[in-house]
Image (cartoon, rainbow over all chains, first blue to last red; front, top):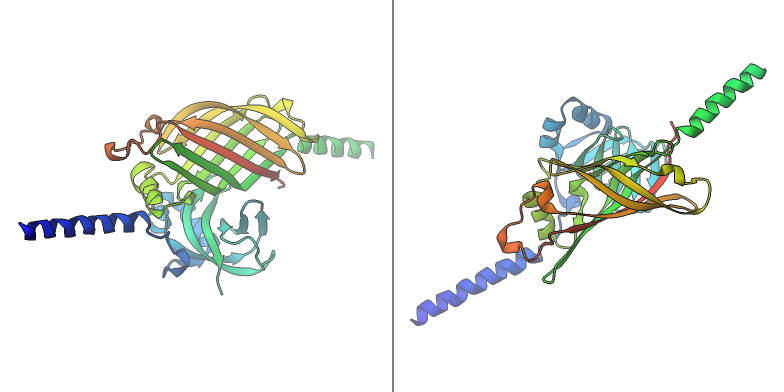
Length: 128
Length: 181
């Protein structure tokens, strides 16, 4: 009887601990993720232009590194760096880059924006 | 010379008339409120273009760009509810039906009506709502409306039915810039 009770208490504790862990689990650490998806912003746009479905299978929600020359920097609530064919919403607002700089940005690919015909990158951080 | 001037004027007035405004960093937030739990999520990555002459407007937001306070909620939202792997964006195509009431060159707050097609989770619904253009140092568009997950074929399982509102409030706030080609 005691043994059963003991096992039951343990089981409840394990379930509770798992629940608490799940509830408080940390957000994704994009910058800490390894990625092999490293490519120029315009080739990423080209892949999306050719076949959005297969591009989504490969890139959507993945950590990616896009390379390109800064076309412009837009900002109000979030700083957005425009590379050829890709718009990157940046994690921090103050950036030491300007138009014409060649940069690498690591972030999550969130898909293709038909309005501007460009790929969207979120939570971007300049690397190197 | 005169002819040149006339041509120049015609070109200039056409440009001024097909004035377009855009943003790539619009804010869209949604709020679910029940006695058990309040849930909210925000995106700063909404894009939008509208034509100040015709009122035609388009919006697009990557579903994966919505940030929740809890990682678990974000996961459930993406995997179980909006299924963002299959339906990566939410879009709206429509128009401001009384755009002529807005004087984009004069400071002020102008009420506007919006109607069009909202697509979420691969399901398209007609919606009508109202909002404001706030012309100050910039051009800000704001609107609020509500949607029901069930209208967009989003099934809420019984276990969490008390925690997710039947009607979700959506807030849209866009700082527009002039679109120069």
